[in-house]
Image 1: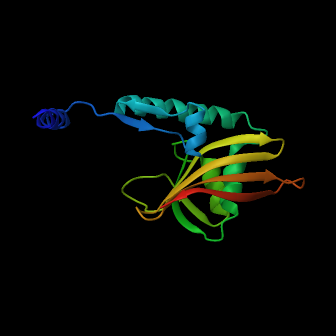
Image 2 (image 1 turned 180 degrees about the horizontal axis):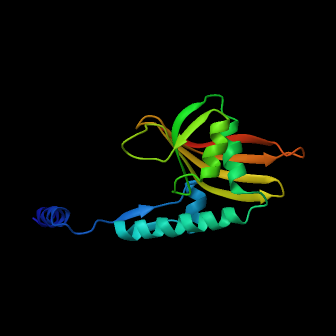
Image 3 (image 1 turned 90 degrees about the vertical axis):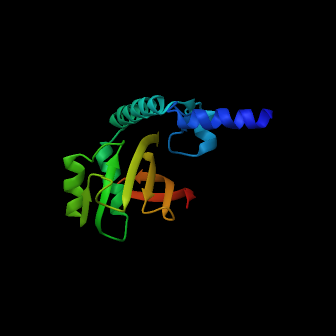
Length: 174
């Protein structure tokens, strides 16, 4: 009897428009972001949306303090790719700057802003951190469908000659 009552209350809550609990953890190794207290757990969808907005604003601010313009890191990340072509790109949950788009186009890429109506190949630069004098770590994600998604931490190193090299570290893939 008690189980039936609990089930009935759960169903009533689920169908009555009551805000459901949600959570969000920033990109990166889950055990690390959880240990750093960066995750928002058991929150409403509105709280999650506000938390994400603040987190991406902080990521933009952090990128503004790098030793090099963050645009250089974004372009270096894609310049190492073998394939060229069209894809959507978001940087800190926003469209890429005109400078990033221009520079990627000169390399043979055709980046656009992400829209649910256009592209299947979604590329996201979530965060760029400087971890050494010439070393940067990029949290990057890609979604090309439910069975083709992943997240990487990509180390970008600025070489003495001003060029960049990249090393990918896969966090997860579907």
